[in-house]
Amino acid sequence: SGKVEKSFDFAGRLRTYLDFHSEYNTGESEWKGYFDLTLRPREDKYYILGIVTDPLGSVRTTETTINGVTEIKDEVESRIEFTAQFAKRFDNVALRIGLMENTFGLGADYFFNDEKGRMKFDVWDFSADEAGADDAHARIGLDYRFFKFFFVSGGIDNLFNSNRRGVYVGGGLKFEDEDFKYLMGSAPSISLK
Image (tube, rainbow, N blue to C red; front, side):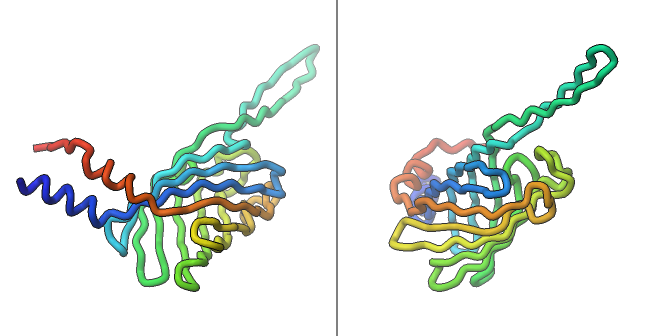
């Protein structure tokens, strides 16, 4: 049938990438962990779905008054955050838009040296909801792939918030997973007709 052929055609051209990495931020003295799944149906567009473990994810403020003395205490809690972005590629430049660590965000990437290197700029959390933030969260960085799957990353995090600004360094694995796309292609489809 035509639906089956289209499904296998889509699965055949879909490229899927898995990315596992962590980064240490000197400004926060904390590690952050990332898992991303990139679905690339065409060379010029892709979707990124991700999970982030953020040690400084949210702040709970408690105010206690004892004998007329008020004490305000901020308790920082870690949390799991989600990413869901759409990316459009123009030659060596990609523009991204969507959910970044639970808030709206924008990003841009410049790829070089046969895709081994990537300069990136991201900005999100425009309402400054993160712990200790007065402005949006912005970062600029560089990823560089060594060997086939391993990459290192580094850059400056929280450019607009001087009290949380820091250098980050990290690394991880990124690879194409041929099997995952066939799982996507064999998943049942839902018709909205």
